[in-house]
Length: 313
Image (cartoon, rainbow, N blue to C red):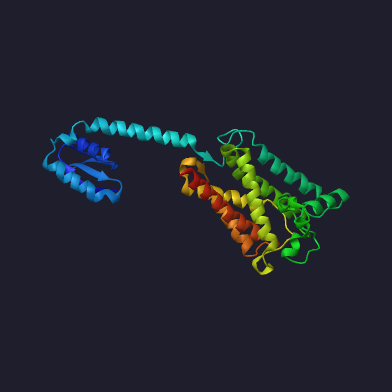
């Protein structure tokens, strides 16, 4: 904020400040020892404000200043109403199911419910019952005997078992994973899926949300299974993380490119997800499907950008 000059009387200061407001220049006036100082908030408008100040000093009775106080008041009331409308329209991912996210959200609840049930049936990736072994075998991307990533991981899918392109998102834990780590895996994914995905389904509807989930799962799962091991590929994996990071990317893109759609991510959530992504990538925690995380994030960013572009056509 910068001072652009001083006027002798309060009435002149009020009138000129009102004129600046009608010109979309945010300003205010304050009493000082030698008169009434005029302050401009945005320095990008300093030159324009100073030129207007000199014009006003030369001819404060000019017709252009007639009725500016009433116009400025009306403009400020309109801006205040617009701010309230934006706040009402804003969807904060921290709100629960009875807040602004509202609605039954059947796809989200089914997604999380299936992930929890499957994780418990398969004993966090280490099934002990025949049923658990069958469930894990049918939902994994490929046979657990496949040696490394590559096209061999597509053998069962190429035989018509297309559900395997998506169903690894319901598996949590993993071979050799301690039970406590498996619990953290499913709890973190379920919590973030509920927090991020809930606002998307509530705002965009069940069909849109389902298609988004399927697209994110396909992209993240395929890349995780097929990319070379040197790039982090591994066909033996599971978890909702790729979809969760897809939701994260989608919301980031919508916030940046389409703020009118009303999505909002708290800064704390952004930090948590980026820090967790880095922790996994640098190897502090082993046996993580990092490719699924990164590809999910990129796919989500693209989906959000496409959604924003479509809305602005």
